[in-house]
Structure formats: C-alpha cells, structure tokens
Image (tube, rainbow, N blue to C red; front, side, top):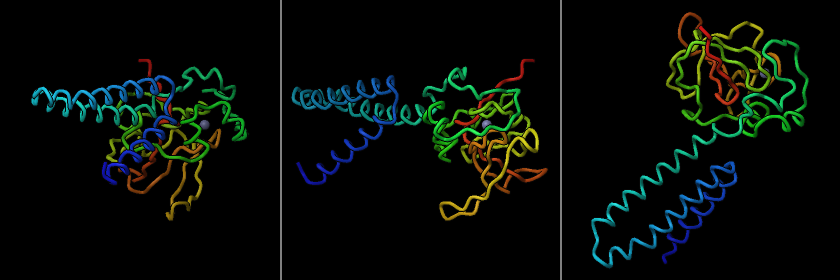
Length: 230
Ligand SMILES: [Zn+2]
C-alpha cells in the first residue's frame, strides 16, 4: 500500500467517524448498511475480474459512485430530518398566541430544543445552503419561530432567492424580529433575532427586491411553516 493510499484511508475513516457522530439512530443504521455494501463490493470486485466478468465489474464501479452520491446527499438532508419534536411537547414556552417576551437561559433551551435547532438558535450557527426545507418553498401561509411559536413572516413577503436560504423582504410586524450588530467572521452584518425568545434566525442584507430592497436571509431549521387553511 502506498503512503498516499494510507493517508486516504485515514481521511476516509475520520470523515466516517465525524458523520457517524452527528447522525441520529436511524441514519446511523443506514450508514452502517452502506458501509457494509461498500465492503462487499470491495471484496467481490477482484473476484469478478478474476473470472473475467469485466463488464459486471465496470457496472459495480458505477454503482459505487451512485452509492457515494446517495450517501453524501442523505448525510446533508438528514441535518433537517432529525427529531424536530413537531408538537413541541417538550417545550413549555412554545405558543403561537402568547406574546410575552421570554427570558429562558441557554442551559434550559439546551434541554428543550433538538440539537440542530439549538445550534442555530442559541449558538448562532448557519445551516448549509440549499439544505434547509424552506429555501425554495412557495406555499401560502405563515412562518413561525420554531423555538417559541412567534409569527415571523408571511409567505407573500418571501421571494425566490438564489442564495440557498429562505429569503423574505419584510417581517410580519415590525416588532416580530429584533436586530443586533454582528461583527463576527471579519464581517459587519446585522443579525436578526426572534422578537419573543431572542433566538438567532439569520441576517438581513440590503440586496433584496423592491419595495424596500431588504433580504432577510433565514435558516429553515428555526422556522416552521403553517399553510393557510383556505
Ligand atoms: Zn422565538
């Protein structure tokens, strides 16, 4: 085995461990099945070449690439399919009608929120572009804060943006979101927070469409869309 092969195996193993750690139970099982499939292909291929089934081996190569593509896609999409506690049974602060400002510590939110929601809302993370479930949705309805249930945006303020995150030109009401200067990552940006629970939602930029040229660049993970009933 050449030195570069060894480096390749170390990198592949490290990547596997990192991905394994961030997945939930179901996706871990899927990952293990995919790995077993890859191992079977690895051992069967020389055997097939031995008995001169070249064409079959060539197809297995293509199957290997397809498995790799499916694997990468499922890892990215699984980021948004994890335990979302859709009915908010674990969240006593969630309400779509109560407008009382919440003062809840990060420690408590950590016990309540799914890990991926917490990472965005309280640790001010950002989901991968084009990975969220709302970046290209066009349904008619309202977008609520996924942390506390505060109404944030109407769908008629949403516009098609090529940035890969759900984008709006205005909030549902002036006080439904608040703003905070953000100088992290060597940039000067304006952070957008939920007006009720102070969770991080995303940032606002001045490159939106008319009439106000604003672009609320939000994370799907901290939004919750409810379609209008009629
Ligand atoms: Zn909120």
